[in-house]
Length: 251
Ligand code: ADP
Ligand code: MG
Image: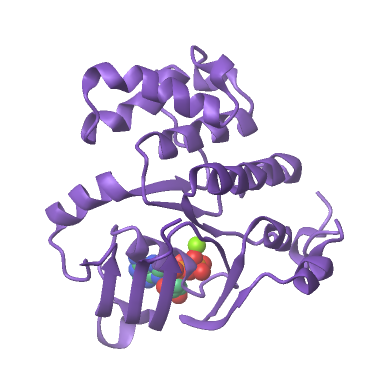
């Protein structure tokens, strides 16, 4: 496997707004991701996780610092160049599932391929294969309203992987799902990571994500305060099924 760095960030800062009203969301991030890694990002609300995902995914430019993606300096790309690179290299899975209601699962997965390098005759077979990879080939003709939340999230993941991205970014992908569907989605990421060698960064509040990733990056106030490989000890610590404190409130 190619273990070279896919992502190299150094001293990345991001400030929103100006002067008194400004907020520094990222306060100097150094982060390196090897190809094929699966990383979980955790941290309290407002700590900069989503901002980091946006910068990683070229949706937003850092205020300062350097960012190399697959060896290319991407910290100061124009909007158009960023969009093009993003289409070829990066895929997103967000909280809440943004499938187009008027399209079948197959067409939802095919749609982004229109913007990529995929020839038109290749789109349907490729979309079908992506649906297979995430275990919902049988839903190809269904519409989003005819699926469960977990099924729709799988279709959204198929859509993300169909274009064969280098980097899959998932920002709280299980936030809108019940815990069981959430765990299934995370297990699916792990499987995609293993079988396709996909580099995956997932923001999550669920400590059990530790079992599904190799590395946990902990953020606070725009800084990375901890970055460690998932050890057996850590898995044992979070291995009970009691969930996090914040989820213990009664439904
Ligand atoms: P997290 O995803 O960890 O909850 P965010 O990256 O969304 O954190 O936010 C980090 C900080 O930046 C927060 O203080 C938030 O209010 C602020 N922030 C995020 N997006 C914007 C924006 N578009 N404009 C102004 N401030 C923002
Ligand atoms: Mg967020």
